[in-house]
Length: 180
Image 1: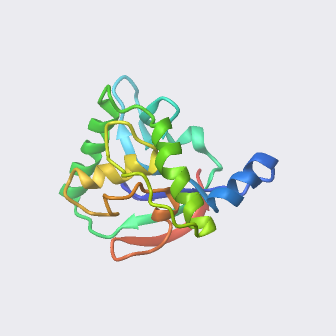
Image 2 (image 1 turned 90 degrees about the horizontal axis):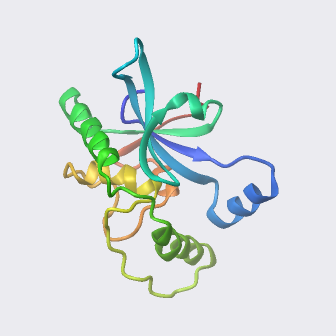
């Protein structure tokens, strides 16, 4: 993996909750971004880190706690060393903001309604999506790019994990693998 690779987590577990979630949402359940091996102050070694959301908000955590997770690796196609460093710094800045909470309301109000609408083909105008400081996983990843003027996904509809899973002119498929 390379810094800024987007990891789209695949729900392939066999328990009942996972099966229901897969039926409702599809194969992809979460998205996170690999930041690379970072120099962590107070430690003697470099540690591979992820940028993601958990139930507290936007966080940066070690890859170790996600070992063996099945992921689809997607790579942003516009890369340069300087741009990569800017995007990583933006991720760190977002995770450091005290207002970057998890968006439970947005998950239900926008994401769940979008997924169900698409699944059942029911036309019902979605509530007007408006970005704010609270984020679900897919918003947090897209926000890193949006803040740097890169339209990786449209801004007028809440992104969901599946939006990151298919190749586009800005995202290339790399592989499906289990994190190590």
